[in-house]
Image (cartoon, rainbow, N blue to C red; front, top):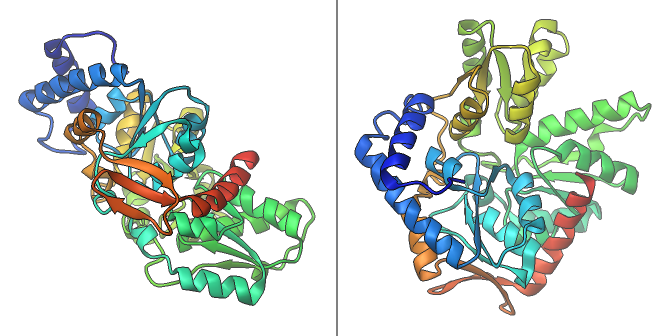
Length: 383
């Protein structure tokens, strides 16, 4: 968060920051005029934020200006933990819709929660890929355990036994295996994350002397069961990056289509194993700080690169220029200001039969939210 500062001073500071750390990420975006406009909008936001006792939470993938104004920047798990523990009257969640609904499910009616635009604008290709009827049929057929990635809608979460994130999915799978023994497990909806986390869980259990039948873990392989941004980060592209930047370590998000392949290749390739980190966005920060490498290929949405460069300026972070999520980039300071001024778009938990998007906000059905919260809380207990 910014301390008391004038619009001119702030715009100068931001112009320097954004062009130093993000010019290649967003060429031509951060002109003097743009930075001055952003600074003026932020000062209005700051005033309203204080009046309404709000906290601003933003995902790592957002534009650099959100990294400068937020009370917390992080991944899905980190933001979920933060919103649960922070005292305030209002939460302004800057990210995609499912993240805002997650936070509302966690805090209930203790805090008002707002997102800056309509759910369809703040969408997610992965959420859109989910086939609810498949999950229901699977549960009837197997009487098994459903583990859903946090990138899912409220109905999927309500049908799930556990929620997981890219930071803890392998731990959640292992916990479920130990608790439910021989029951079949379904991991959804991201097939790329499912494959790598299944492999990790099986390998970790083997190290503990537990030989698990891998067929007990089923990965959801339905049509388009992936993040459309991370799916494009494929093995051929990453191998070409490695060839160009031989001294660089690899920070690869588990949602990348190459993550499982790299994990398997690294079992035989000792050089790759030394430099490969298949981690969540939050773990990218800690991994880069611990590594002795001076350069990193960042295999995720390029908004993350700004945070890495700013927090670890002595190291080089190479972005994948095509890795941009149009839904995340729907978040703007103008929309946040409008939300604070006009109390839009609030997420409510209500007695509706299904999720409803109305003029005054989004209404989540109470019973569905309660079941979803059970699965989320199970995840939060595991860490």
